[in-house]
Image 1 (spheres, rainbow, N blue to C red):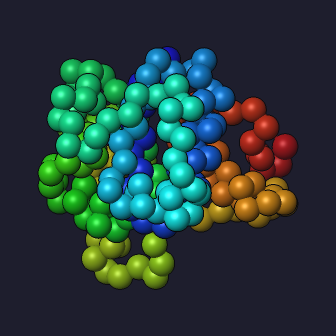
Image 2: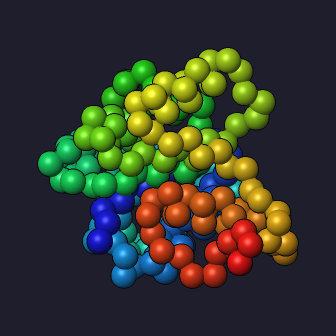
Amino acid sequence: MKKIVVAISGSSGALYAKILLDKLQQLEAQWDAVGVVLSDNAVINWELEVGKPQFEDYPFDFYDKKDFYAPFASGSAQYDTMIVCPCSMGMLARIATGISNDLITRAADVVLKERRRLILVTRETPLNLIHINNMKTVTEAGGIICPAVPSFYGNPNSIEAVLATVVDRVLDLAGLQLEGAYRWGE
């Protein structure tokens, strides 16, 4: 059973986060706890791209970005996976440089220092050298950069199905067992 942090930062791609939360809800038998924290810009983008948030419909614990009493603000709570989806380049930069000025960056710092799994679903194009170097830094620290680049060989037939190809990959990286995900050669 897993304990997972989902952080939603302010880049475009709130629909990725919604699909992730929906799929995690369906996989409820595989986790003990899911803690969710959103940046201020994530809330704005969610409203622009998805609509009015209905977070109360999810069986997760939601935390304010300034709540340093959240369990995953400490390694002692033993959250084993953190997913930042989508991950803005500003959030990537703060994580890469160890700036722990809110709950998202503190949790990422904790996950890295505890040698647990940090997955950043980066959502930006084009990239500059600063972005690339920050990705290198996070990778060298043990994090996983999983760009929000969908696949098409499964012939997805809707925007949600296209985006789910990224979310399915993220859930694979998190060690969750998925039913119905497209598998090459199967």
